[in-house]
Length: 82
Image 1 (cartoon, rainbow, N blue to C red):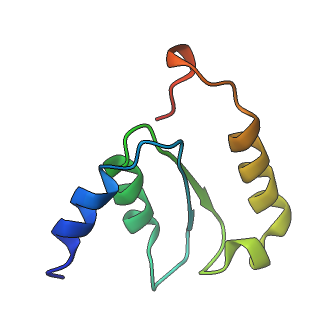
Image 2 (image 1 turned 180 degrees about the vertical axis):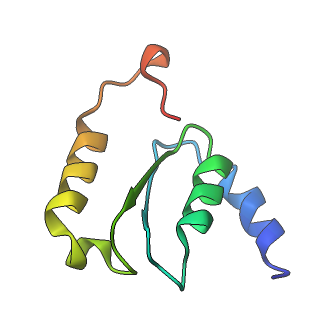
């Protein structure tokens, strides 16, 4: 995909805490894509849920748990994401 490289450069510029949630069984945007994105965004955290493409609908409790855990984590260098 020709647009991949520019997207990676753009993703690498994200400085905000970032949570990437991927569906383990997603055939459209695979968990591998999520892993690549999380590896590109500095300090990003990856969560893979046992879902297909709509994790917030397919596993709402697990999705919410992941988001709340991410939003309530302590920040600082000693708690760097990764």
